[in-house]
Image 1: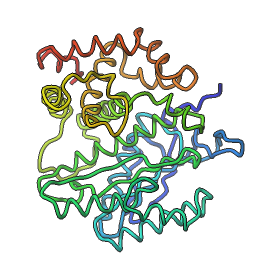
Image 2: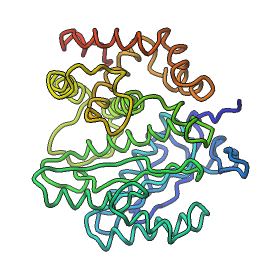
Image 3: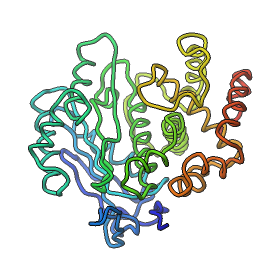
Length: 367
């Protein structure tokens, strides 16, 4: 089966300025050369498969609501390009960021739906009706707007982002609520928002490895939630750590310091607390679906599970061994081929690993 392979960067990006983009980033400094094209950028074909256009430029666009600082657009573009440079590129990228003002949010949704209509993805009326609804079932625009508004009115800061695209559109679409650190709210960290961007782009990397447009096929290749979200958590932390050490991250305001070791230590504490409380008796393999009362555990325990798998194999095992085979073999078979054990056997081994002292667990991280 023909596979869409992720481009090994060394090729270039044609940067398309999104709305409210204040300045183009220094592509040379990011390791991305301006002007070439991607062998993997493609458009959806007429017969339900993805046809690749080798002449298509790499496209990364960021759109921010008019009530947000325009500099946020440039910062997020830079981080997305750092993700492209490290992990590759499969489809054009759109990242839509909502603020808190209702009128500005509606304007951004109108821009989003006009784009979907002009590109033949969805007609404007249907798009606006779904994206301006609050339920986050048919659309997400107003949902992310209201998350930002909730952060303004509640005692606890909240924020969310997600991959919200449709594979049939051949575009990685991400949406985000107000990035609290980048927006300068007290008690927040801009670096935490940078991590979120990398986390979401990794979901694009995951999605871009699957050629089929059939939802059941895609779900079978994705794997369980602990693997999907744990992979995004660990891989984004790994790249963040590398970029932080290299001084390559955009400079942002932080009210607290974010590091890979601090986050992974927090995850260990969170795992212990969950397993001693409301998630008592749960194991890794039980964290297989969204909407679970212990869904948060899929992120923290999943991150440590991926760290354990990487430690026993290689840093590139997901990109080089699991994802290229998951669609044809199915996730379980691809997992077994990559790691030499069934998911069930890994579940037992990993839960035993979690019983070790924290210093021994932290020792597997390449920090």
